[in-house]
Length: 533
Image 1 (cartoon, rainbow, N blue to C red):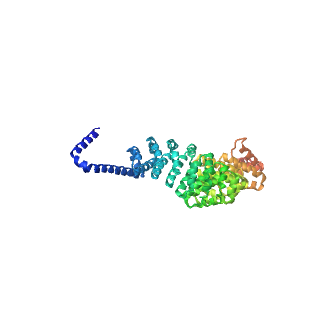
Image 2 (cartoon, rainbow, N blue to C red):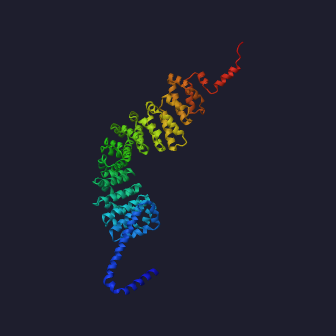
Image 3 (cartoon, helix red, strand yellow):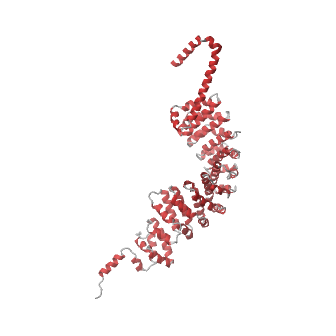
C-alpha cells in the first residue's frame, strides 16, 4: 500500500510539472511505449520460460519460483503468441513430472485450456492439447482429472479440424488418456473418438497416421469389448494396408494395434488374419528397426496362441521358420515374443511341435537358454522347450539331443534363479522327462538331480529297462545301477517303487554287488573264511 501511494504521489507531481508537454506530445507516445514494453516483457518472459523448461536442470528452480501461477494468467493474454507460448511452457513443465502436472490440475488451468480449445487458432489448439497430454500421461488419476474438466469432447472436435497438426495433437492426448485403464479408454470411446481416429489413419500425413494408430492400440488393449469397438469402426483393413509402409515408426504402431486387437479372442484374431496379413507380415521380422521386429513377433504370438488352426496357418506360410531365424538374429527382450510364439505353437499338438523341431527351433532355444542374462527370458525359453518335448519320446529326444536337460537342472538348482525361473525349469524338466526314453540323456541327471526331479528320472528307467536287455547291460556298465542303490527313498514312496522295479530287472546277486557296503561285507567274509588245510 505504501509503495502504491508513493507511486501515485510521484505521478501526480510529474503530471503538474510537465502538463503542457505531456498533454501535447509525450503522454500518448509514452502510453503507447509503456504498453509496447509490457507486451515485449510478457513475450520475452514466456519465451524464456518455454526455453528453460526444455532442460531438466531448470525444472526445480522454475517450480520453486512459482512459475505455474505466473503462466496461468498469460493463457488469457490478448496477444495470441503469448497465449500459445504460455501453453507450450506449461506443457513442457507438466510433461516433466507428476508433481508439476498435479500443479496444473490444482491451479484450475485445465478448464481454461479446454474452453480455449473451441475458439482459438490452430497454434493454440496444438499447444493446449499438448498440455492435456502432458498431464494425462503420468497416472490414471491425472488422466481422470483431464476427463473431468470436459477435455474429451473438445479433443474429439479437434479431430475434425482441417489442420493435421491439430488432429495429431488431439489424437495423441486421447491415446495418453486411454492407455491407463479400461474405464478411461471407454470414456474416450463414448466421446466418439474411434471413428474419427480411423479416419485419421487414412490421412496422407505419416505423423498423423502414427499417432492415430497408436491411440487405437491404446484403446484396444484393455478388453475384448473395446477392441471390438475399434474393429467395428473398420480399423483392421486400414491398418493392414500399412504393414509394408516404408516408415518404421508407423509400422511399429500398426503392428502394435493389430496385436492388441488379436490378443483378446479367437474371433478377433481371425478377423486380423482375414485381412490377409500373411505372409507379408513376415517381412517385418527382418526389418532394420528392432521395435518393428518385436511388434511383428508379438502379433504372430498373439494370433498363434489361440488355436491349432491359427498356428497351422502361420506354419503353412513359413511363419515358424521365420520366427526361428528372427530369434537367432536378435537378443534380449526383442527375442521374447518369438520364444513365446514357438512355445504356444508347440503346445497345441505333436504335429505343430514337430514343425518347430524341423524348423531347427530347439537348437536356437538352447542358445537362448545359454546366452540370455535375464531370468524372465530364460523362464520363457524353458517353458517353450517343455512344450516342445512333452508330446512323445521322439519330441523329448529332439530336445535332449541339444543337451537341454543339464541346463534346465542347473537353472532349477541355482539359488540365484528367480522363483518363476525355478518353477518353469522344474515344470519343463518334468514334461520332457515323462516322455524321454533316451537313457544316456537320463543318466546325465541321475547323479546330480534332487529328489523332486530324481523320481521322474528313475521312473523313466523303470519303464524302459524291463523291456530292453541291451539297455539293462549298459545301465550296469555305466554305473547307473550302482547309483540307484545309493538313493535313499522313503519306504512306500513312488521313488522306492521305481527303484524296486529296476532292481527286479537284475539277478539278486548283481543288485547286492552294487549295493552300498557290499564290498565291506565281502571283506568280512574273507576275514571269516577258514580255508581247508
